[in-house]
Image 1 (cartoon, rainbow, N blue to C red):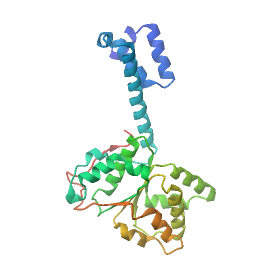
Image 2: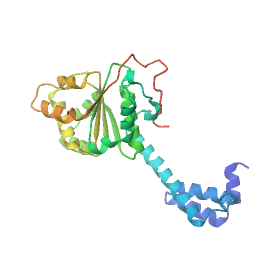
Image 3: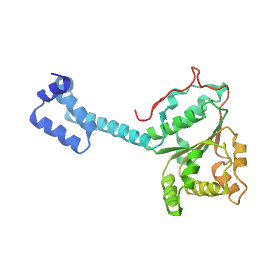
Length: 264
């Protein structure tokens, strides 16, 4: 008899009914803790009813938080889970203790502060942006990841109505990542669309741009057009934070961030 069969064998019929009912109304965390209490009565015998109930409620809260996090990651387009706790202070790389603590605190999300993460190929720009997004989702907020080339393709494929819906979707995203910005020139149509996206998101959340270009050079890849200055002003403001990652490529070295598959 395996553990699952043993558990079923020792439960009373009314206990089984309670657990089944809890799972039917999607209180799986509550049910898991209550099952433990049913199976191990001597372990909990010194606890009051209220204390046992609090344990069930805490278990349900943790269960709900984990479930929400999994759903947020699933919808984020992030392929590899990398966490801020994997980063250690390394001032020579541009990663100070002050910066890492600021990123973990997350105050910038409510203030709508944007980030530009710049550096040469392999210095960890995408990894750091991903880690910031994961931290956002651990706090219960939404995040969405696009490579600049993919975002441009999506924008070009949409008619006016579908683009309007797309903008509304991005407005609700707390942390938007635009990866590999600046590899190609941004034409008029994309510049106008990005300006509308930046406008509707202004003050609503954080946008993270990763690029091999420094912050002051990002405007140079936007085609000369009437919205060029407006787009740069909304995405690349003086109050936004630039993180410059330094050093040689981490790829293939012991410093490279491996992460986990986002669907695990």
